[in-house]
Image 1: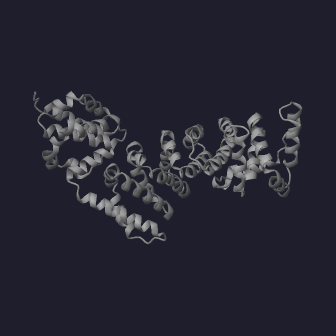
Image 2: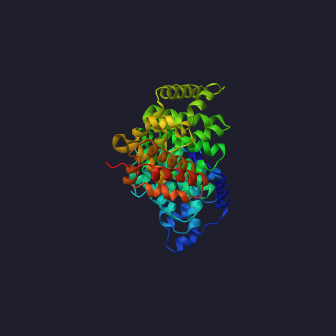
Image 3: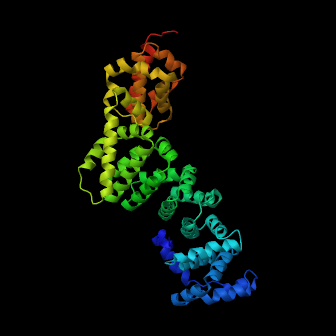
Length: 437
């Protein structure tokens, strides 16, 4: 559980520079910001050799833990706060047994140990935010009791801004903090309650990161999907199935594929109806079959891949063509699969879009309204035309649902295929006879 739980080259380099900078402790004492007792203690350990520091921490560890936290709580200058954070991290490095010295300070001050770190997180100083996050993660992961939302809320808000920032160091430290915290079930639910974190992780993956970052982000998703409610909703809200499939297909490292396949296994075993349709649309079945034929060094991946292949195969075999179509609709990833351009399919199935109060038709219209993907828009507007062509009252329904205006708008879309398909659909809407109820 040591500080190396979250490691980052920038933090290491900056920490060694901070160790060599002098801190005006006597000035703080003259200004009555620290007491003479505190000055004596800090002078004893500050800028001393590692051996001397270790000896002091061995004999007076509890005194120094309390001192560091009290100084961090009351001093304001960022360079001094940086120095204190480095002293705390140095005390903890390779000494997990000292974590309890810091957490025990709550007995003398209820704001400790977390309050001063929360304040450091609020500072507009990248080093301080990252170093405080590194140490906080160690303390939180070591807690023997479940963490309260109040202990987590502000820190998770900071982690959300870290994973959404443009800074590679913030990405790196933020993702590592999450990896460690998500091992705790109460942290999974707390993270799930902050959509910015998941959205940030998704964006990191979309930007073609190196294998280590892909592995770490996928590891976060794997831990999150142990929770039933998250497994049921995460793909619907964040579209992670096609994204993770794409990352796995392009991965060169076995560990990246292994953790993604394990995530898929969680999604299938905990929430099959929510996730299998999207997996079939993302062409995960042929990929799973391909993985079954590969040689792996890890036994776990073999079992997970076979499980995934078998579940997808069973689901695929029970699908009718219309089920395939509704799976595609539910996933939001319309593509030019054969059903869309088959007249026979539409003759047979156009009226099924009316079932359950026009449920599937409304899903199609939502995609037409909300999607920014030109392929999805082209397919969706094409399908509206097919529905009107093959269902005699389709024109009136489309009108009643207010979708005619959107179809006409798409005739001036920037994508030429969307414009063409919208024009074809408008012709259907105009030429089909009006059937009144």
